[in-house]
Length: 266
Ligand SMILES: [Zn+2]
Ligand SMILES: [Zn+2]
Ligand SMILES: [Zn+2]
Image 1 (cartoon, rainbow, N blue to C red):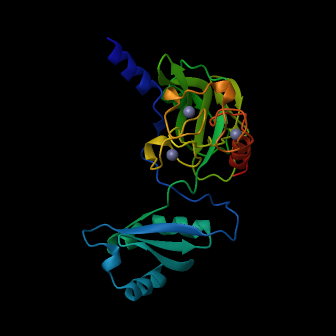
Image 2 (cartoon, helix red, strand yellow; image 1 turned 30 degrees about the vertical axis):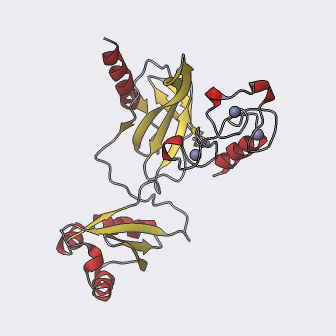
Image 3 (cartoon, protein in one colour; image 1 turned 30 degrees about the horizontal axis):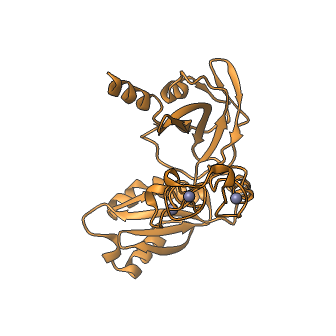
């Protein structure tokens, strides 16, 4: 039956993530950067209810290399180190953490690097790619393999279609490897450029439709209605961003082109 097929397809292209991975800072990170470790209580009592000054005394007595402490919220504080190896050593100090009833983690997204390889047959699942990946000797551990999907209009609705590009995330990295291998084939690794977010509802940049709180705007004429009920034709389109003669979602828009360049330089 059809539903079954869809489930298999979605599963096939679901991102493959390494689950037992605990984040560490790359030890070759540039100096002058701050290395934050989040601390939470491992008991019912939130860390924010503990005595702040008492806590800092007990930290500085045992832990080396702390630059400062900061309160994040009731449940979380940040311990800021000026060297990556000292932040990592703190994470590995399980005796201290256990004695103090604390859990330590590195915030997500601060230590990974993502690259893209192209021309990967769409028949390969993310898991298969992960299992077949050959890495150079200096290469860091791969923690996520994700096929890049494209939204394509199929009849009246949009469907996610696989592209031949695959994003690979490496742990504790400050640079990407030049190549990875899949079954003897060498693939150059290019920097991953996150897509420009544009809301299909209000047409603004920076958020997606499912989070939109603005009123709907038409991508053809810019008035407050859905483009499907627009009486204007698309060759008379007026872009809400630049007033140019194209759809407000067009890749031809100079404002959108600028956003894409900004994303590349991030
Ligand atoms: Zn919006
Ligand atoms: Zn319209
Ligand atoms: Zn425009």
